[in-house]
Length: 601
Image (cartoon, rainbow, N blue to C red; front, top):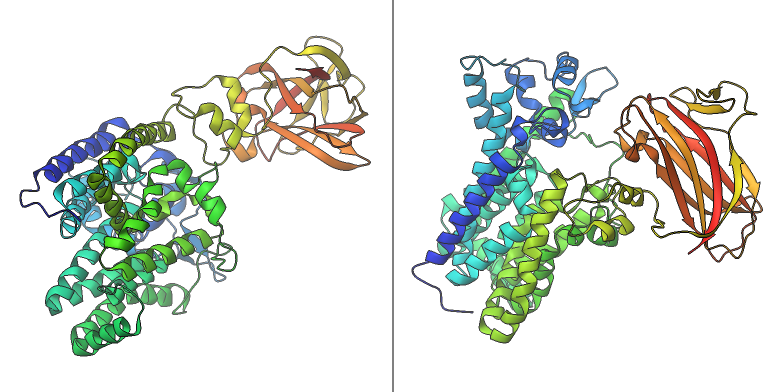
Protein backbone atom coordinates (compact mmCIF):
# COMPACT_ATOMS: atom_id res chain seq x y z
CA UNK A 1 0.00 0.00 0.00
CA UNK A 2 1.31 3.42 -0.93
CA UNK A 3 2.04 6.07 1.68
CA UNK A 4 -1.03 8.22 2.30
CA UNK A 5 -0.94 11.72 0.87
CA UNK A 6 -1.40 14.77 3.07
CA UNK A 7 -2.72 17.12 0.37
CA UNK A 8 -5.43 14.94 -1.22
CA UNK A 9 -5.84 17.46 -4.04
CA UNK A 10 -6.27 14.94 -6.84
CA UNK A 11 -9.23 13.25 -5.16
CA UNK A 12 -10.78 16.70 -4.52
CA UNK A 13 -10.49 17.60 -8.20
CA UNK A 14 -11.96 14.23 -9.13
CA UNK A 15 -14.87 14.87 -6.79
CA UNK A 16 -15.53 18.26 -8.42
CA UNK A 17 -15.44 16.68 -11.88
CA UNK A 18 -17.83 13.91 -10.79
CA UNK A 19 -20.15 16.49 -9.23
CA UNK A 20 -20.35 18.46 -12.48
CA UNK A 21 -21.02 15.28 -14.45
CA UNK A 22 -23.73 14.09 -12.07
CA UNK A 23 -25.45 17.48 -12.02
CA UNK A 24 -25.41 17.61 -15.82
CA UNK A 25 -26.91 14.11 -16.04
CA UNK A 26 -29.61 14.93 -13.50
CA UNK A 27 -30.71 18.37 -14.68
CA UNK A 28 -29.83 18.52 -18.38
CA UNK A 29 -29.21 15.11 -19.97
CA UNK A 30 -32.34 13.41 -18.64
CA UNK A 31 -34.26 15.50 -16.09
CA UNK A 32 -36.83 12.98 -14.87
CA UNK A 33 -38.42 15.60 -12.64
CA UNK A 34 -39.71 17.30 -15.81
CA UNK A 35 -41.19 14.10 -17.23
CA UNK A 36 -44.67 12.71 -16.79
CA UNK A 37 -46.17 9.29 -16.18
CA UNK A 38 -43.85 6.36 -15.66
CA UNK A 39 -40.83 8.47 -16.69
CA UNK A 40 -41.31 10.96 -13.85
CA UNK A 41 -39.08 10.93 -10.79
CA UNK A 42 -41.93 9.70 -8.58
CA UNK A 43 -42.95 6.66 -10.59
CA UNK A 44 -42.78 2.87 -10.42
CA UNK A 45 -40.83 1.74 -7.31
CA UNK A 46 -40.11 5.30 -6.19
CA UNK A 47 -43.82 6.06 -6.01
CA UNK A 48 -44.23 2.98 -3.79
CA UNK A 49 -41.47 4.07 -1.42
CA UNK A 50 -42.92 7.58 -1.37
CA UNK A 51 -46.63 6.75 -1.08
CA UNK A 52 -46.54 6.84 2.74
CA UNK A 53 -45.90 10.59 2.74
CA UNK A 54 -48.89 11.98 0.82
CA UNK A 55 -51.06 9.29 2.47
CA UNK A 56 -50.13 10.59 5.94
CA UNK A 57 -49.45 14.30 5.54
CA UNK A 58 -51.81 15.36 2.74
CA UNK A 59 -54.73 12.93 2.51
CA UNK A 60 -54.63 11.46 6.04
CA UNK A 61 -55.65 8.15 4.52
CA UNK A 62 -53.02 5.50 5.10
CA UNK A 63 -55.43 2.55 5.14
CA UNK A 64 -58.27 3.12 2.69
CA UNK A 65 -56.36 4.95 -0.06
CA UNK A 66 -59.51 6.66 -1.33
CA UNK A 67 -57.35 9.21 -3.19
CA UNK A 68 -55.34 6.67 -5.18
CA UNK A 69 -57.55 6.55 -8.29
CA UNK A 70 -57.34 10.32 -8.79
CA UNK A 71 -53.55 10.24 -8.52
CA UNK A 72 -53.20 7.27 -10.85
CA UNK A 73 -55.48 8.89 -13.42
CA UNK A 74 -53.83 12.30 -13.25
CA UNK A 75 -50.14 11.36 -12.94
CA UNK A 76 -49.96 7.69 -13.97
CA UNK A 77 -46.86 6.78 -11.88
CA UNK A 78 -47.57 3.09 -12.56
CA UNK A 79 -50.04 3.58 -15.41
CA UNK A 80 -53.46 2.77 -13.94
CA UNK A 81 -52.32 -0.21 -11.87
CA UNK A 82 -52.06 0.42 -8.10
CA UNK A 83 -48.78 -1.38 -7.48
CA UNK A 84 -47.77 0.74 -4.50
CA UNK A 85 -49.81 -1.30 -2.01
CA UNK A 86 -51.49 -4.67 -1.57
CA UNK A 87 -55.16 -5.06 -0.80
CA UNK A 88 -56.11 -6.88 2.40
CA UNK A 89 -59.10 -9.15 2.89
CA UNK A 90 -61.02 -6.41 4.70
CA UNK A 91 -60.61 -4.04 1.73
CA UNK A 92 -57.92 -1.87 3.30
CA UNK A 93 -54.43 -1.48 1.86
CA UNK A 94 -50.91 -2.08 3.18
CA UNK A 95 -47.87 -0.54 1.55
CA UNK A 96 -45.81 -2.97 -0.53
CA UNK A 97 -42.46 -1.38 0.32
CA UNK A 98 -41.06 -0.77 3.77
CA UNK A 99 -40.86 2.80 5.01
CA UNK A 100 -37.12 3.55 5.09
CA UNK A 101 -37.11 5.59 1.90
CA UNK A 102 -40.15 7.57 3.05
CA UNK A 103 -38.22 8.49 6.19
CA UNK A 104 -35.29 9.72 4.08
CA UNK A 105 -37.58 11.53 1.62
CA UNK A 106 -39.42 13.34 4.44
CA UNK A 107 -37.26 16.53 4.63
CA UNK A 108 -37.46 17.07 0.87
CA UNK A 109 -41.17 16.24 0.76
CA UNK A 110 -41.76 18.76 3.57
CA UNK A 111 -40.02 21.54 1.65
CA UNK A 112 -42.04 20.79 -1.49
CA UNK A 113 -45.27 20.59 0.49
CA UNK A 114 -44.60 23.99 2.06
CA UNK A 115 -43.75 25.64 -1.29
CA UNK A 116 -46.31 24.02 -3.60
CA UNK A 117 -49.21 26.34 -2.81
CA UNK A 118 -47.17 29.63 -2.73
CA UNK A 119 -45.66 28.62 -6.10
CA UNK A 120 -49.17 28.07 -7.48
CA UNK A 121 -48.88 24.29 -7.83
CA UNK A 122 -51.34 21.75 -6.52
CA UNK A 123 -50.52 20.53 -3.03
CA UNK A 124 -51.23 16.91 -3.97
CA UNK A 125 -47.88 15.20 -3.45
CA UNK A 126 -47.12 14.65 -7.15
CA UNK A 127 -47.06 18.07 -8.80
CA UNK A 128 -43.73 19.51 -10.09
CA UNK A 129 -42.38 20.80 -6.73
CA UNK A 130 -42.58 17.28 -5.27
CA UNK A 131 -40.97 15.72 -8.34
CA UNK A 132 -38.13 18.24 -8.24
CA UNK A 133 -37.67 17.89 -4.48
CA UNK A 134 -37.18 14.11 -4.63
CA UNK A 135 -34.86 14.42 -7.66
CA UNK A 136 -32.76 17.18 -6.09
CA UNK A 137 -32.79 15.39 -2.73
CA UNK A 138 -31.54 12.19 -4.30
CA UNK A 139 -28.73 14.01 -6.08
CA UNK A 140 -27.77 15.91 -2.91
CA UNK A 141 -27.65 12.70 -0.86
CA UNK A 142 -25.56 11.05 -3.59
CA UNK A 143 -23.06 13.92 -3.67
CA UNK A 144 -22.85 13.84 0.12
CA UNK A 145 -22.22 10.11 0.00
CA UNK A 146 -19.56 10.50 -2.67
CA UNK A 147 -17.71 13.13 -0.62
CA UNK A 148 -17.62 10.90 2.46
CA UNK A 149 -16.81 7.88 0.28
CA UNK A 150 -13.65 9.79 -0.58
CA UNK A 151 -12.97 10.44 3.11
CA UNK A 152 -13.57 6.78 3.91
CA UNK A 153 -11.08 5.45 1.37
CA UNK A 154 -8.46 8.06 2.35
CA UNK A 155 -8.20 6.28 5.69
CA UNK A 156 -6.79 3.25 3.88
CA UNK A 157 -5.39 4.30 0.48
CA UNK A 158 -3.36 7.09 -1.09
CA UNK A 159 -4.91 10.14 -2.68
CA UNK A 160 -4.31 8.99 -6.26
CA UNK A 161 -5.78 5.55 -5.53
CA UNK A 162 -8.87 7.21 -4.05
CA UNK A 163 -9.15 9.59 -7.03
CA UNK A 164 -8.94 6.71 -9.48
CA UNK A 165 -11.46 4.67 -7.46
CA UNK A 166 -13.94 7.57 -7.46
CA UNK A 167 -13.55 7.96 -11.22
CA UNK A 168 -14.12 4.23 -11.71
CA UNK A 169 -17.25 4.39 -9.55
CA UNK A 170 -18.89 7.38 -11.21
CA UNK A 171 -17.63 7.16 -14.79
CA UNK A 172 -17.50 3.40 -15.07
CA UNK A 173 -20.47 1.86 -13.21
CA UNK A 174 -24.25 2.01 -12.96
CA UNK A 175 -23.79 4.28 -9.95
CA UNK A 176 -23.80 7.21 -12.43
CA UNK A 177 -27.34 6.44 -13.53
CA UNK A 178 -28.79 5.76 -10.09
CA UNK A 179 -27.07 8.66 -8.35
CA UNK A 180 -27.95 11.24 -11.01
CA UNK A 181 -30.91 10.27 -13.17
CA UNK A 182 -32.86 7.60 -11.31
CA UNK A 183 -31.76 9.04 -8.00
CA UNK A 184 -35.21 8.66 -6.48
CA UNK A 185 -34.53 4.92 -6.31
CA UNK A 186 -33.22 3.53 -3.03
CA UNK A 187 -29.79 2.44 -4.22
CA UNK A 188 -27.71 5.61 -4.13
CA UNK A 189 -29.40 6.65 -0.86
CA UNK A 190 -28.36 3.34 0.68
CA UNK A 191 -24.89 3.80 -0.82
CA UNK A 192 -24.60 6.92 1.35
CA UNK A 193 -25.97 5.05 4.38
CA UNK A 194 -23.29 2.38 3.95
CA UNK A 195 -20.56 5.01 3.57
CA UNK A 196 -21.54 6.53 6.91
CA UNK A 197 -21.84 3.08 8.47
CA UNK A 198 -18.30 2.17 7.39
CA UNK A 199 -16.91 5.51 8.54
CA UNK A 200 -18.53 5.34 11.96
CA UNK A 201 -17.44 1.73 12.35
CA UNK A 202 -13.87 2.76 11.57
CA UNK A 203 -14.03 5.59 14.11
CA UNK A 204 -15.67 3.39 16.76
CA UNK A 205 -12.89 0.82 16.66
CA UNK A 206 -10.32 3.59 16.98
CA UNK A 207 -11.88 5.31 20.01
CA UNK A 208 -14.82 3.13 21.21
CA UNK A 209 -16.95 6.23 21.81
CA UNK A 210 -20.66 5.81 22.46
CA UNK A 211 -21.67 8.39 19.84
CA UNK A 212 -20.19 6.24 17.08
CA UNK A 213 -21.97 3.14 18.42
CA UNK A 214 -25.33 4.92 18.45
CA UNK A 215 -24.77 6.16 14.90
CA UNK A 216 -23.91 2.62 13.83
CA UNK A 217 -27.17 1.37 15.33
CA UNK A 218 -29.23 4.09 13.67
CA UNK A 219 -27.60 3.43 10.28
CA UNK A 220 -28.06 -0.33 10.48
CA UNK A 221 -31.68 0.29 11.48
CA UNK A 222 -32.21 2.70 8.58
CA UNK A 223 -30.66 0.29 6.05
CA UNK A 224 -32.91 -2.51 7.36
CA UNK A 225 -35.97 -0.25 7.37
CA UNK A 226 -35.28 0.53 3.71
CA UNK A 227 -34.49 -2.99 2.53
CA UNK A 228 -35.07 -5.70 5.16
CA UNK A 229 -32.35 -7.92 3.68
CA UNK A 230 -29.86 -5.17 4.52
CA UNK A 231 -30.05 -6.31 8.12
CA UNK A 232 -26.78 -8.03 7.16
CA UNK A 233 -25.19 -4.58 7.37
CA UNK A 234 -24.76 -5.35 11.08
CA UNK A 235 -21.99 -7.78 10.08
CA UNK A 236 -19.75 -4.88 9.14
CA UNK A 237 -19.39 -3.44 12.68
CA UNK A 238 -19.50 -6.91 14.26
CA UNK A 239 -16.61 -8.26 12.16
CA UNK A 240 -14.60 -5.04 11.78
CA UNK A 241 -10.92 -5.41 12.55
CA UNK A 242 -10.85 -9.18 12.03
CA UNK A 243 -8.37 -10.45 9.46
CA UNK A 244 -9.20 -14.16 9.78
CA UNK A 245 -11.45 -16.69 11.49
CA UNK A 246 -8.66 -18.09 13.61
CA UNK A 247 -9.44 -18.95 17.22
CA UNK A 248 -7.22 -16.14 18.49
CA UNK A 249 -8.97 -13.58 16.22
CA UNK A 250 -12.40 -14.75 17.38
CA UNK A 251 -11.39 -14.60 21.06
CA UNK A 252 -9.98 -11.11 20.60
CA UNK A 253 -13.19 -9.90 18.95
CA UNK A 254 -15.37 -11.39 21.67
CA UNK A 255 -13.13 -9.69 24.22
CA UNK A 256 -13.80 -6.35 22.54
CA UNK A 257 -17.56 -7.00 22.63
CA UNK A 258 -17.39 -7.73 26.36
CA UNK A 259 -15.16 -4.77 27.13
CA UNK A 260 -17.44 -2.37 25.27
CA UNK A 261 -20.81 -4.01 25.77
CA UNK A 262 -22.54 -0.78 26.85
CA UNK A 263 -22.08 1.17 23.59
CA UNK A 264 -22.81 -2.01 21.63
CA UNK A 265 -26.02 -2.49 23.59
CA UNK A 266 -26.99 1.10 22.84
CA UNK A 267 -26.28 0.44 19.16
CA UNK A 268 -28.67 -2.51 19.26
CA UNK A 269 -31.37 -0.44 20.96
CA UNK A 270 -30.94 2.36 18.40
CA UNK A 271 -31.27 -0.10 15.52
CA UNK A 272 -34.35 -1.71 17.10
CA UNK A 273 -36.02 1.69 17.56
CA UNK A 274 -35.64 2.53 13.88
CA UNK A 275 -36.77 -0.91 12.69
CA UNK A 276 -39.80 -0.73 15.00
CA UNK A 277 -41.25 2.02 12.78
CA UNK A 278 -42.15 -0.68 10.27
CA UNK A 279 -43.44 -3.06 12.89
CA UNK A 280 -45.81 -0.44 14.30
CA UNK A 281 -47.00 0.42 10.80
CA UNK A 282 -47.74 -3.23 10.00
CA UNK A 283 -49.62 -3.58 13.28
CA UNK A 284 -51.67 -0.49 12.47
CA UNK A 285 -52.40 -1.45 8.84
CA UNK A 286 -52.86 -5.20 9.08
CA UNK A 287 -53.30 -6.07 12.75
CA UNK A 288 -50.08 -8.14 12.65
CA UNK A 289 -46.59 -7.20 13.80
CA UNK A 290 -45.05 -8.96 10.80
CA UNK A 291 -46.59 -8.79 7.32
CA UNK A 292 -45.16 -10.04 4.02
CA UNK A 293 -46.20 -7.59 1.33
CA UNK A 294 -44.31 -8.92 -1.70
CA UNK A 295 -46.86 -11.70 -2.30
CA UNK A 296 -45.47 -14.04 -5.00
CA UNK A 297 -41.95 -12.56 -4.93
CA UNK A 298 -39.55 -14.43 -2.65
CA UNK A 299 -35.96 -15.26 -1.84
CA UNK A 300 -34.93 -18.73 -3.01
CA UNK A 301 -31.77 -19.50 -1.07
CA UNK A 302 -31.59 -23.06 -2.40
CA UNK A 303 -31.37 -21.96 -6.01
CA UNK A 304 -29.79 -18.51 -6.34
CA UNK A 305 -29.72 -17.14 -9.89
CA UNK A 306 -25.99 -16.37 -9.99
CA UNK A 307 -25.65 -16.85 -13.76
CA UNK A 308 -28.81 -15.02 -14.85
CA UNK A 309 -28.41 -12.17 -12.38
CA UNK A 310 -24.77 -11.61 -13.29
CA UNK A 311 -24.47 -12.48 -16.97
CA UNK A 312 -27.90 -12.42 -18.63
CA UNK A 313 -28.23 -10.10 -21.62
CA UNK A 314 -31.59 -9.04 -20.28
CA UNK A 315 -30.21 -7.24 -17.23
CA UNK A 316 -27.01 -8.96 -16.06
CA UNK A 317 -25.01 -6.97 -13.54
CA UNK A 318 -21.62 -7.55 -15.17
CA UNK A 319 -23.00 -7.31 -18.72
CA UNK A 320 -24.25 -3.77 -18.14
CA UNK A 321 -21.68 -2.73 -15.55
CA UNK A 322 -18.59 -4.79 -16.50
CA UNK A 323 -16.30 -2.43 -14.60
CA UNK A 324 -17.36 -4.23 -11.43
CA UNK A 325 -15.34 -7.24 -12.53
CA UNK A 326 -12.53 -5.28 -10.86
CA UNK A 327 -14.17 -5.95 -7.49
CA UNK A 328 -13.73 -9.69 -8.01
CA UNK A 329 -10.18 -9.38 -9.37
CA UNK A 330 -9.33 -7.04 -6.49
CA UNK A 331 -10.06 -9.74 -3.92
CA UNK A 332 -6.58 -11.18 -4.58
CA UNK A 333 -4.54 -8.04 -3.68
CA UNK A 334 -7.04 -7.19 -0.93
CA UNK A 335 -6.41 -10.57 0.70
CA UNK A 336 -2.69 -9.83 0.66
CA UNK A 337 -2.65 -6.19 1.79
CA UNK A 338 -6.16 -5.13 2.81
CA UNK A 339 -7.51 -4.35 6.26
CA UNK A 340 -10.72 -5.63 7.89
CA UNK A 341 -10.75 -8.60 5.52
CA UNK A 342 -13.44 -10.59 7.26
CA UNK A 343 -16.00 -7.78 7.45
CA UNK A 344 -15.47 -6.79 3.81
CA UNK A 345 -15.39 -10.26 2.25
CA UNK A 346 -18.13 -11.86 4.35
CA UNK A 347 -20.48 -8.98 3.58
CA UNK A 348 -19.45 -9.02 -0.12
CA UNK A 349 -20.20 -12.74 -0.50
CA UNK A 350 -23.36 -12.88 1.63
CA UNK A 351 -24.92 -9.78 0.03
CA UNK A 352 -24.19 -11.08 -3.47
CA UNK A 353 -25.77 -14.41 -2.54
CA UNK A 354 -28.92 -12.73 -1.19
CA UNK A 355 -29.28 -10.43 -4.20
CA UNK A 356 -28.98 -13.40 -6.59
CA UNK A 357 -31.54 -15.39 -4.58
CA UNK A 358 -34.42 -13.01 -5.34
CA UNK A 359 -36.71 -14.82 -7.77
CA UNK A 360 -37.28 -11.66 -9.84
CA UNK A 361 -33.60 -11.74 -10.83
CA UNK A 362 -34.11 -9.39 -13.81
CA UNK A 363 -34.35 -6.36 -11.53
CA UNK A 364 -30.71 -6.06 -12.51
CA UNK A 365 -27.38 -4.83 -11.20
CA UNK A 366 -28.93 -1.85 -9.43
CA UNK A 367 -29.41 -4.03 -6.35
CA UNK A 368 -25.63 -4.17 -5.88
CA UNK A 369 -25.08 -0.40 -5.83
CA UNK A 370 -25.66 0.09 -2.11
CA UNK A 371 -22.88 -2.43 -1.43
CA UNK A 372 -20.33 -0.55 -3.59
CA UNK A 373 -18.78 1.26 -0.60
CA UNK A 374 -17.81 -2.23 0.65
CA UNK A 375 -16.88 -3.66 -2.75
CA UNK A 376 -14.64 -0.72 -3.54
CA UNK A 377 -12.23 -1.76 -0.82
CA UNK A 378 -11.22 -4.56 -3.19
CA UNK A 379 -11.34 -2.27 -6.23
CA UNK A 380 -9.05 0.21 -4.48
CA UNK A 381 -6.70 -2.63 -3.54
CA UNK A 382 -6.43 -3.54 -7.23
CA UNK A 383 -5.90 0.09 -8.25
CA UNK A 384 -3.17 0.37 -5.61
CA UNK A 385 -1.46 -2.67 -7.12
CA UNK A 386 -1.72 -1.23 -10.64
CA UNK A 387 -0.02 1.98 -9.54
CA UNK A 388 2.85 -0.04 -8.12
CA UNK A 389 3.16 -2.21 -11.26
CA UNK A 390 3.69 0.14 -14.18
CA UNK A 391 3.40 -2.58 -16.82
CA UNK A 392 -0.01 -3.64 -15.49
CA UNK A 393 -1.07 0.01 -15.30
CA UNK A 394 -0.25 0.57 -18.98
CA UNK A 395 -2.14 -2.59 -19.93
CA UNK A 396 -5.24 -1.91 -17.83
CA UNK A 397 -5.66 1.83 -18.39
CA UNK A 398 -6.93 1.50 -22.01
CA UNK A 399 -9.37 -1.20 -20.87
CA UNK A 400 -10.71 1.05 -18.11
CA UNK A 401 -11.08 3.96 -20.56
CA UNK A 402 -13.06 1.74 -22.94
CA UNK A 403 -15.30 0.72 -20.03
CA UNK A 404 -15.85 4.42 -19.22
CA UNK A 405 -17.09 4.89 -22.79
CA UNK A 406 -19.21 1.75 -22.52
CA UNK A 407 -20.86 3.02 -19.32
CA UNK A 408 -21.71 6.36 -20.97
CA UNK A 409 -23.18 4.41 -23.88
CA UNK A 410 -25.24 2.20 -21.54
CA UNK A 411 -26.50 5.28 -19.67
CA UNK A 412 -27.47 6.94 -22.93
CA UNK A 413 -29.32 4.00 -24.50
CA UNK A 414 -31.10 3.28 -21.24
CA UNK A 415 -32.91 6.59 -21.52
CA UNK A 416 -32.61 7.67 -25.16
CA UNK A 417 -32.16 6.23 -28.62
CA UNK A 418 -34.89 3.55 -28.42
CA UNK A 419 -32.22 0.84 -28.11
CA UNK A 420 -32.43 -0.63 -24.60
CA UNK A 421 -35.47 -2.73 -23.65
CA UNK A 422 -35.34 -4.16 -20.13
CA UNK A 423 -37.92 -6.86 -20.89
CA UNK A 424 -36.63 -8.07 -24.24
CA UNK A 425 -32.84 -7.75 -24.39
CA UNK A 426 -31.50 -10.91 -26.03
CA UNK A 427 -27.95 -11.96 -26.79
CA UNK A 428 -28.54 -11.66 -30.53
CA UNK A 429 -30.00 -8.15 -30.21
CA UNK A 430 -27.34 -7.00 -27.72
CA UNK A 431 -24.48 -8.15 -29.95
CA UNK A 432 -26.04 -6.33 -32.88
CA UNK A 433 -26.46 -2.98 -31.12
CA UNK A 434 -23.55 -2.89 -28.64
CA UNK A 435 -21.63 0.37 -28.97
CA UNK A 436 -24.07 1.87 -31.48
CA UNK A 437 -25.93 5.10 -30.84
CA UNK A 438 -28.75 4.25 -33.24
CA UNK A 439 -29.86 1.05 -34.97
CA UNK A 440 -31.79 0.10 -38.14
CA UNK A 441 -35.46 -0.64 -37.56
CA UNK A 442 -35.16 -4.27 -38.66
CA UNK A 443 -32.70 -4.93 -35.82
CA UNK A 444 -35.60 -4.66 -33.39
CA UNK A 445 -36.80 -8.10 -34.48
CA UNK A 446 -33.84 -9.60 -32.58
CA UNK A 447 -35.54 -8.66 -29.32
CA UNK A 448 -37.94 -11.53 -30.00
CA UNK A 449 -36.42 -13.67 -32.72
CA UNK A 450 -32.77 -14.85 -32.58
CA UNK A 451 -32.76 -15.48 -36.36
CA UNK A 452 -32.40 -12.51 -38.71
CA UNK A 453 -31.30 -13.01 -42.31
CA UNK A 454 -29.98 -9.80 -43.82
CA UNK A 455 -28.54 -11.08 -47.09
CA UNK A 456 -30.19 -11.79 -50.44
CA UNK A 457 -32.08 -15.12 -50.33
CA UNK A 458 -31.01 -17.69 -52.91
CA UNK A 459 -33.35 -20.14 -54.58
CA UNK A 460 -36.45 -18.68 -52.90
CA UNK A 461 -39.30 -21.24 -53.03
CA UNK A 462 -42.87 -20.48 -51.94
CA UNK A 463 -44.24 -23.33 -49.84
CA UNK A 464 -47.50 -21.86 -48.57
CA UNK A 465 -49.82 -18.90 -49.15
CA UNK A 466 -53.18 -17.84 -47.75
CA UNK A 467 -55.24 -14.74 -48.54
CA UNK A 468 -57.89 -15.88 -46.01
CA UNK A 469 -60.55 -15.80 -48.76
CA UNK A 470 -62.02 -19.07 -47.47
CA UNK A 471 -62.10 -17.87 -43.87
CA UNK A 472 -65.44 -17.54 -42.10
CA UNK A 473 -66.58 -16.37 -38.69
CA UNK A 474 -65.74 -13.34 -36.51
CA UNK A 475 -61.99 -13.62 -37.20
CA UNK A 476 -62.40 -12.59 -40.83
CA UNK A 477 -63.52 -9.32 -42.39
CA UNK A 478 -63.69 -8.13 -45.99
CA UNK A 479 -60.43 -6.88 -47.46
CA UNK A 480 -60.57 -3.29 -48.64
CA UNK A 481 -58.71 -3.81 -51.94
CA UNK A 482 -59.95 -7.08 -53.49
CA UNK A 483 -62.01 -10.22 -52.94
CA UNK A 484 -59.62 -11.55 -50.29
CA UNK A 485 -60.32 -11.26 -46.59
CA UNK A 486 -58.36 -9.93 -43.63
CA UNK A 487 -57.72 -11.85 -40.44
CA UNK A 488 -58.97 -9.59 -37.65
CA UNK A 489 -57.76 -9.73 -34.03
CA UNK A 490 -58.78 -7.57 -31.08
CA UNK A 491 -59.12 -7.87 -27.31
CA UNK A 492 -62.05 -10.28 -27.58
CA UNK A 493 -60.54 -12.32 -30.45
CA UNK A 494 -56.95 -12.78 -29.40
CA UNK A 495 -55.74 -16.04 -30.96
CA UNK A 496 -56.04 -16.84 -34.64
CA UNK A 497 -56.62 -20.28 -36.14
CA UNK A 498 -53.43 -22.31 -36.60
CA UNK A 499 -52.35 -22.59 -40.24
CA UNK A 500 -50.54 -25.88 -40.72
CA UNK A 501 -48.95 -27.50 -43.77
CA UNK A 502 -46.50 -30.30 -44.51
CA UNK A 503 -42.86 -29.34 -44.95
CA UNK A 504 -39.69 -31.45 -45.10
CA UNK A 505 -37.31 -29.56 -47.40
CA UNK A 506 -33.91 -30.73 -46.16
CA UNK A 507 -32.10 -28.70 -48.82
CA UNK A 508 -33.32 -25.37 -47.44
CA UNK A 509 -31.34 -23.38 -44.86
CA UNK A 510 -34.01 -20.84 -43.92
CA UNK A 511 -37.76 -20.46 -43.67
CA UNK A 512 -39.44 -17.06 -44.04
CA UNK A 513 -43.06 -16.29 -43.18
CA UNK A 514 -44.44 -12.88 -44.14
CA UNK A 515 -47.76 -11.10 -43.91
CA UNK A 516 -49.19 -7.60 -44.26
CA UNK A 517 -50.20 -5.96 -40.97
CA UNK A 518 -52.45 -2.94 -40.52
CA UNK A 519 -53.19 -1.11 -37.27
CA UNK A 520 -54.91 2.13 -36.38
CA UNK A 521 -53.04 2.49 -33.06
CA UNK A 522 -49.61 1.21 -32.10
CA UNK A 523 -49.43 -1.00 -29.01
CA UNK A 524 -46.51 0.20 -26.86
CA UNK A 525 -46.58 -2.39 -24.07
CA UNK A 526 -44.34 -5.25 -25.15
CA UNK A 527 -46.23 -8.04 -23.43
CA UNK A 528 -49.48 -6.94 -25.15
CA UNK A 529 -48.09 -6.64 -28.68
CA UNK A 530 -49.46 -8.91 -31.39
CA UNK A 531 -47.20 -11.94 -31.85
CA UNK A 532 -46.44 -13.46 -35.26
CA UNK A 533 -45.51 -17.09 -34.50
CA UNK A 534 -43.73 -19.63 -36.72
CA UNK A 535 -43.26 -23.25 -35.62
CA UNK A 536 -41.57 -26.37 -36.91
CA UNK A 537 -43.16 -29.58 -35.67
CA UNK A 538 -42.41 -33.27 -35.91
CA UNK A 539 -45.33 -35.69 -35.36
CA UNK A 540 -47.17 -32.98 -33.47
CA UNK A 541 -44.25 -32.02 -31.20
CA UNK A 542 -42.78 -28.52 -31.50
CA UNK A 543 -39.16 -28.74 -32.70
CA UNK A 544 -38.48 -25.00 -32.95
CA UNK A 545 -40.56 -21.85 -32.50
CA UNK A 546 -39.73 -18.29 -33.51
CA UNK A 547 -41.84 -15.25 -32.68
CA UNK A 548 -41.99 -11.57 -33.60
CA UNK A 549 -43.92 -8.81 -31.82
CA UNK A 550 -45.09 -6.95 -34.90
CA UNK A 551 -45.95 -3.64 -33.19
CA UNK A 552 -42.22 -3.03 -32.74
CA UNK A 553 -42.17 -2.33 -36.49
CA UNK A 554 -45.54 -0.54 -36.76
CA UNK A 555 -46.77 2.96 -35.99
CA UNK A 556 -50.22 4.52 -35.81
CA UNK A 557 -52.21 4.04 -39.03
CA UNK A 558 -49.48 1.97 -40.66
CA UNK A 559 -49.71 -0.86 -43.19
CA UNK A 560 -46.55 -2.91 -43.52
CA UNK A 561 -45.32 -6.29 -44.72
CA UNK A 562 -43.35 -7.95 -41.92
CA UNK A 563 -41.17 -11.03 -42.38
CA UNK A 564 -40.37 -13.60 -39.71
CA UNK A 565 -37.22 -15.67 -40.35
CA UNK A 566 -36.21 -19.05 -38.97
CA UNK A 567 -32.87 -20.78 -39.46
CA UNK A 568 -33.78 -24.41 -40.05
CA UNK A 569 -32.33 -26.80 -37.47
CA UNK A 570 -30.70 -30.17 -38.15
CA UNK A 571 -33.44 -31.91 -36.17
CA UNK A 572 -36.24 -33.86 -37.85
CA UNK A 573 -39.42 -31.97 -38.76
CA UNK A 574 -42.42 -32.74 -40.94
CA UNK A 575 -44.72 -29.70 -40.81
CA UNK A 576 -44.98 -25.97 -40.23
CA UNK A 577 -47.49 -24.03 -38.13
CA UNK A 578 -48.23 -20.29 -38.32
CA UNK A 579 -50.50 -18.39 -35.95
CA UNK A 580 -51.10 -14.92 -34.55
CA UNK A 581 -51.80 -13.88 -30.94
CA UNK A 582 -52.95 -10.42 -29.90
CA UNK A 583 -51.59 -10.69 -26.33
CA UNK A 584 -54.54 -9.03 -24.50
CA UNK A 585 -54.09 -5.77 -26.40
CA UNK A 586 -57.16 -3.61 -26.89
CA UNK A 587 -55.64 -2.29 -30.15
CA UNK A 588 -57.21 -4.11 -33.16
CA UNK A 589 -55.01 -5.40 -35.96
CA UNK A 590 -55.73 -6.63 -39.51
CA UNK A 591 -53.55 -9.31 -41.14
CA UNK A 592 -53.47 -9.96 -44.88
CA UNK A 593 -51.77 -12.31 -47.38
CA UNK A 594 -49.80 -14.81 -45.39
CA UNK A 595 -46.88 -16.32 -47.34
CA UNK A 596 -44.19 -18.82 -46.36
CA UNK A 597 -41.07 -19.53 -48.42
CA UNK A 598 -37.88 -21.53 -47.98
CA UNK A 599 -34.49 -20.38 -49.25
CA UNK A 600 -30.74 -20.84 -49.05
CA UNK A 601 -28.05 -18.42 -47.99
